[in-house]
Image 1: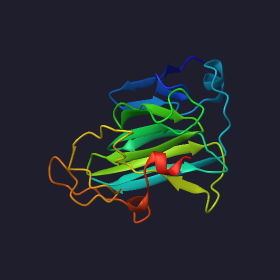
Image 2: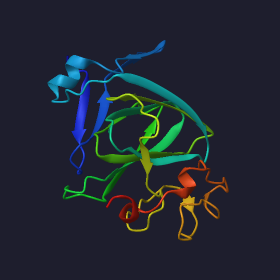
Image 3: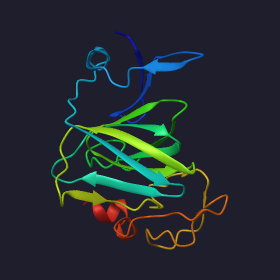
Amino acid sequence: MGQIKVEKCEIEGLYVITPAVHGDDRGYFMESYNLNDMKEQGLDMVFVQDNQSMSKKGVLRGLHFQKQFPQGKLVRVIRGRVFDVAVDIRKESKTFGKWFGIELTAENKKQFYVSPGFAHGFLVLSDEAEFCYKVTDFYHPGDEGGIAWNDPEVGINWPEIVGEYNGTANAEGYTLTDGTKILLSEKDQKTLTLKETIK
């Protein structure tokens, strides 16, 4: 017990979790998830599925949310470096439209829990990144929604991105500071602003 440190973020429903890492000259060991430790910290969500993805530098996935079957997500990076973001899309929330971001890396081993009611996305800052996450509900085809990653009213400060907002979610003209193009899925390029999406 007591193998994790949990920090509440300024937006209710978001938590940064740091595991205890035991290392020596051979390597390290850590518990990436322990139900009892989570419950001890007041986090009693139940996960039903593990997912993993690999993305190249400049890939930006998001901002995604589920419409009828919202998921809580416990995310971490096992290779590389990403900037991970959650945006509060709960209309009744006092922090509606506010965002929180954190850098997740294979080295810092931090995890980020995003409760249901948030749009979520991440930007890959390393040559490649492997991203793992647990979810509290199964994937339901056709249930995914999205908001524009560059919505000026939300105003996410994506690190290392340069470019001017052109009125759409299209990433044309945006790059990382080293010239790497920002890569979005076709679906993510067609997303609308928060105000246009959540009515």
